[in-house]
Length: 186
Image (cartoon, rainbow, N blue to C red; front, top):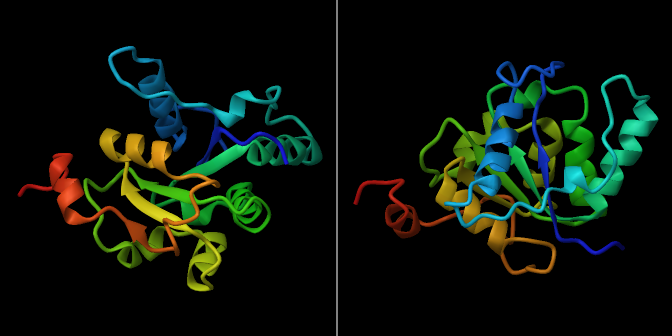
């Protein structure tokens, strides 16, 4: 297996390359945080580990590129919005390969939440590929709001070499940690 130090980011693109019309805006936010010299955040972006592919590439070319990127990743950041569960393109494939083949943890981020204390209540956001792996106990997932302190900590802490947590598909940061980060009022 390849040296696995990258962060693989999966999101529902909604069939568009318009950065304001799809969840790509959250991926771009991660890249912005990493490029900001006032934020101590280094995103080792798995999408930059292979040559770019375009929407006009064949499905097999896209699949090969995604597999290569996933194989070089230590975890997946999965951006979950109300439309993610409807993705019929690549998200299901990415989740399946990440969990079944690469055995990597998933950092499930929710842009519409400021804190998360009960991941099971967010099941309506989960694509079937994720839901089935969570309920079967196959996926290791930490559920976090798409807020800088939570994302920074999760990306730094969780990877294929850390097999102790999350132990199942319902991981989350405790209330005290989220209060410390300013996500919950004390």
